[in-house]
Length: 255
Image (spheres, rainbow, N blue to C red):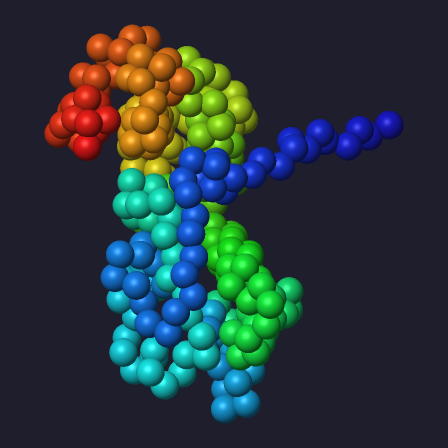
């Protein structure tokens, strides 16, 4: 008898970022200067959505003025969010190829065109789903250069990244992360450096410090933060934090 191979459970590659960073959306006719990104819905002469574009840079004025049906500014929780720096300057999605996203975007445009009770809340929720589905397309499409997106789209390495994102306080060893990815230690180390562009230890330390920064801004105490993000002591956390950001955890709390 032939046994079916055991398929590993799917892991969520985006949830950790949405848990760690506050997502806020402001619907507006023009991009908000302080936002991390902008979403523009482009349509035809009948105001039917045709394309959805996510800009992490500044949208071209001609696009905003002529083709945009409605837009929104997106804040991912600040520039320390790894997704912000990993995304390309623009991502264009053809809505005709994605029926579900097309329907959601059409509802978004209709809400913008017809003021009704709860319009702001409805548009915010719809835009959140639109953004999530754009990010899925980016990850599924892969990346041509080393970095976070390339790692998240890799069929094996993304499991190690998700493991570190979900449990930063765990004392991860290379052997454990390689096992999570279904790879040998040597293969894992070589692939991680090639695809993500750094070592697993360096990536984990950066992720821990980013989470620590978020917690300190929220008013948490240094010792508690150090323990929460996986450092052995407050002093070890403080030294790594100073090297990474150029200022101490105390300065972050005071500011």
